[in-house]
Image 1 (tube, rainbow, N blue to C red):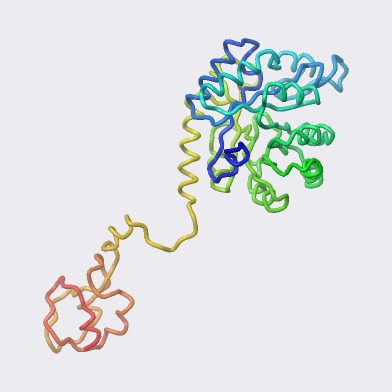
Image 2: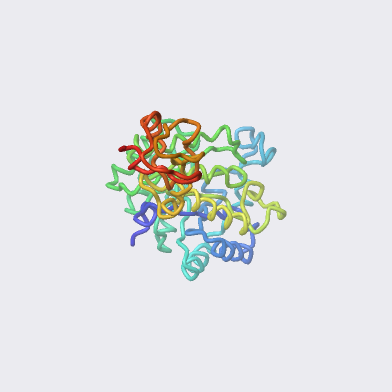
Amino acid sequence: MKLFDIISNGDVYFIAEMSGNHGGSLEKAMEIVAAASVAGADCLKLQTYTADTITIDCDSSDFQTLKGLWQGRTLYDLYKEAYTPWEWQGEIKSECERLGMDFLSSVFDPTSVDFLESIGCEAYKIASPELVDIPLIEYAASKGKPMVISCGMGTVEEIQDAVDACHRMNNDQIVLLKCTSEYPAVYADMNIATMADMRERFGCTVGLSDHSMGWTVDVAAAALGASVIEKHFCITRAEETVDSAFSMDCEEFKSMIEAVRCARDAVGHVTYERTPREEENIAGRRSLYAVAPIHIGDTFTNENIRSIRPAHGLASKHLPKLLGKTARRDIPFGSPIRQEDLDS
């Protein structure tokens, strides 16, 4: 089955984003791959750039991070620390395949697309800041592979431009991820209800790229129909790598997957049919019973019949029609009222 079909098949597809959490160590990167597999991730994602392909070495205020987790650092220094060496990526991809996971990477310029083509990458990710780089999106889409596009900070017009860029390249394998470009993201800012509008407005498969803490938002996203959930992944937040502060460890990711799948199961489908287990419990309903001894000729009143549990008697809705009628049989205390009592 093709990757886009797998993503769009109705189940939730889980992406573990390594980002710079390897801390510059290939050994650590491989530990993250193994841990992501143990956690149940469907896909391990990297980012394919160098400091020189994503920015320039300049310390003017334009190129400095002014607030947040990386306050005071230049973009160049930050990306130099966070990047994943390209010579690792083929090896990481092979290990993902050995462990049964898909491999995905974000592209940031044409050279990264070309490199990932050379190692057989099956899909391309567009990060939220690159949503507005239409030439890059066109170039990646021209390869005919699935395009997973994060939409953080994106307006309707900007998202439409990105979708149109893919269509111009005859590529309709598009997955749009609702994203809030905050690190970590605040729940009240996430507005994941937008996913349903994105699905309808742009005609694409949708999911969530989640930078919030925990998995509360991911469970809600699954209930709202997310096909993809992407979370940053690390061995432990105690190591304080570039993105570890808002990343999940193996046990958290595993718990998140379990919770999301339970939520998706609970959503189910529209039905008014009883489940088999409900059928077993139908006797727990209310019905009409004699709550005092009733003799032939007695009048049915609220004092001698009531709607109570269990449901072995006449349906409770018939009580108004039964009141005032005359009993044609003796009905002991605690006995169910029957259809024949109503018909008398």
